[in-house]
Every structure is written in C-alpha cells, then in structure tokens.
Length: 321
Image (cartoon, rainbow, N blue to C red; front, side, top):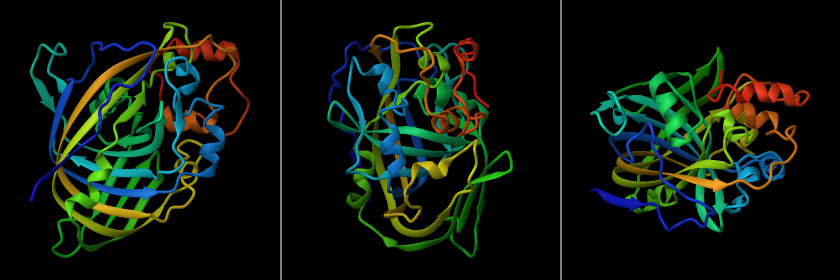
C-alpha cells in the first residue's frame, strides 16, 4: 500500500522572509528513493556547544527567529539513493528543462526548534556526485561533500548487507550486519518525514556579514508516498578524524530504531532570509568541529582564525575541501 506523510508547513516567525532565485526547482519530485534511516541520540557535546558556535546559524539569525537544539528528539542518520533526481537545470534556472542527477546522499539531521516549531537541520552530508554536491550546498543548504559509497550485497536480497562511506581514504561511516527485522506499517515510519527542515546556507558569506546583513536559510517540506517499510538491525561505526568528525554528533552509535524505506518524495524549498543582529567581533567563528563537518579541510583542534584569515575565507564564498 502507498501512504502519504507530509511535513507540517506553518509560517515560521522571522524578521524578514523572501523567496529568491535558486539553482534548484522550488518543487522537486524524487521517485523510487530507497532510504536507510537510523535514529541516534544527540551527543551531550552538541548541546553544550550549540549556543556558542553557530551550529544552527542561530548566532547570526537570532534577531529573526530563535533556533535551538531540541533535546527531546533523536538525530536522524539517513543514507539514501535517488535514482530519479530531477534536481538541476540544463541551462538557465527556472527557464530550461531539468536534468536527472542520480546519486547517493548521506545526511545527519539534527532536531531543532525554530520559535518552538519542531524541525530538523542537516549538519553533515556526503554525496558521490559532484553536481549534486554543489546543488545541495547552494540550493538546499545541505552541506554535502564528495565521498565514495560502497555497498555489499549477499544472497538473493536486493537490500545491501553492509555500507561504507569513505572520504580521503577515511572510513567516515560503516553500517554492517544490516539484518531484516520484518515489515512495519507505513504509519510507524511516517513521523520521520513530518517535520520540515531549516538548513542554513553553506558559503562562508553566511559566517561573517561582509556581503549581506541577512542570514539565508532553506525551508524544506517533504511529502513522502511510502511504498515499503521494514525494520532493520545494523551496527554502525565511525573512524575518528580531525577533518570529518562525525563521531562528535552522536552520544551513542547504537540506533534507537532503524528502517529500510522505499518512497516517492516531493520536496518544496523556500529561501528564508533572517535579519542579522549587530555583528559580534570578527574573531567569533564556529567551533572547529562544526567547520570541519560543514566545510571540511579544517582541523577540529587548534587556535582560532585571525580576522585577516577570516576575511580571506569570506572572499571565496564557496570555500570547501
């Protein structure tokens, strides 16, 4: 059976909101998507750091909306394959035909509250398609970076028995011993799609107000037509690294629950601009682990950037490694 679940989409209370041109269509349809979704407890370290280091963009956007970590909900680790992803344009955005970019996407969605409304925000992402990477970063606010994805199948099952994401030779994430635990009703997994996303735009100009006095977010609402849902068991492992410190986001890598889902997704995206409060000192930057997760190439430990170095980073609005 096919059941539809949709994110609640009430108006977010912001100081200023506007829809602007985007490299992605405002409404996207992804057919035949397969997703492994695991719910994991958010690390205590994230809760301690969130108000100090712009984990959710809240330090620059707090004049328009209050964004905080929702400590009552778990994080979502999502590994998805999009075989039919009409998510880009062949030429001029909104004036030319769309183009299909099949790709895998790994996301960590952290639970947030935006003026009290339950939402999620993608704080880490990997993909195996370079054009999809740029579109996710610049159009969806999903901070995707390039990685290699490998799946191991066994027997007659079409579902993988293990998964590995590697980046620069680092085993960023491994999911092994993926075991089928039986079919579940679509209503049991519908809640995974019911809260919208509020992602903050990735380029460095959103860190420091050198070009704009507004903070750009992408508000995304997902409708899911679920065609199949199965509960699974899996073991997760991450390799510690200064450059992709995925371990830092989770208190425990034992899933609270995990599912294998097949669905058609309809995603609507609206750009939201929040008026920034008066800027603090230029030396205030996100904590290094957050930089490493969103941008890459930066160590998770070390001295803060100098103002001169930060200005140089801002001159390259799409700096990431």
